[in-house]
Length: 238
Image 1 (spheres, rainbow, N blue to C red):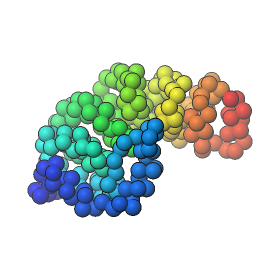
Image 2 (cartoon, helix red, strand yellow):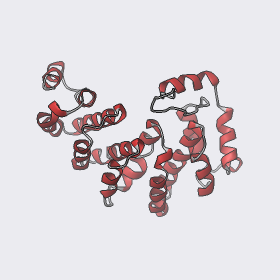
Image 3 (cartoon, helix red, strand yellow):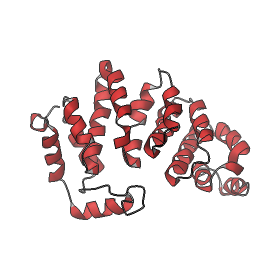
């Protein structure tokens, strides 16, 4: 239901700040590595939980694009998160506008500048869209110099995996197999693990060919649901 008191970015932000807790903000800042030289350096948290942010987003489905832009450009992590959650909800509930939403989302991916912002939006917007549309955008994103766009490419395929469509995920993992960043290694391993949940034989075949070349982080994530004996078998291939 639309909450008319939240029909501006300022109203949305004020509502989010009413939930803010300084002790929670301190925990989130540490968890999302916002210190000097860390991947989230400079990101600012006010201490609002994801369920609270999502609840606010669901009350403002009719908010305009200009207001969403203000949210997405905000310095506060939770305010940006709310902007992306609004896009997720608009995409879900406004099918005629999906192409427009996807285009806008792609143009603002650089503002999804922490892994949770990517992971909570990319599969639900881009991933769903690509079930029935050209997937070349995944490979363009994977070649980006922006870490968050690279992560969005592979994480978006979660939606494809859940439809037992694995080829793009495997191709992207191979393409970025030697990525130096921990967040990409984890994302690749996570998606491989998701494939294994749907079809263990596909993952096993991939590991038999590539386990020795996978970064250890990726491999550990990928084999999490294998038996202890099987995990040791693949780890010894390194």
